[in-house]
Image (cartoon, rainbow, N blue to C red; front, side, top):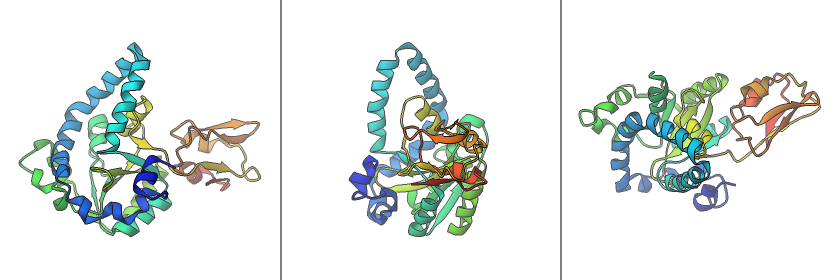
Length: 264
């Protein structure tokens, strides 16, 4: 159970707690300023932060781990995520009701491409103050212009298709515990994945782990190839799951033609 489940979910999955999408949280005065700065900060500095973290890990890994833990705790109060399986994505969309798809800041920074793989939930762009950024923050213009309202059903189908392409689903706070977005992340285009792989945790693992049905597994290795977290390997002709590495994203299930994998 992650820390947010304890502090914001009464011991249950915090992102399925309706109060974390409530309007009272939306009107936190800090959010407008945070969102105003979010896109410019990420587009201008995130690539450099990754390079600095790489250099710090080479020069003084012990100190870097300590600083990363402190930074991660700070991020948990502002903008932090958790890996969620597609079933929980569906449950979140059932709670929130409205969805706006928009280009991903991470893809713009790392791939220099506009890819609409992020989804605002619970609050409209106007409520979040995004439209107000036009003419105020030039860096935000492509993201605001690319916003598109979609139905929850369409959003779920789009995210399932992204999972087929290897993306994991993550849910994100904007001034915790208010939950504002679902993103679909892969190593090549996601800043959160890249920071976390370098020791700066920006999201919690999922609440469940992959489990193997030994009577079905043929040891084909498709799930090993699909796993972003190096949590799977072939041992004695069958898949073995490293529970410490597994993030419970569920991608492995979609790649298994024998239906030998489940989350538990």
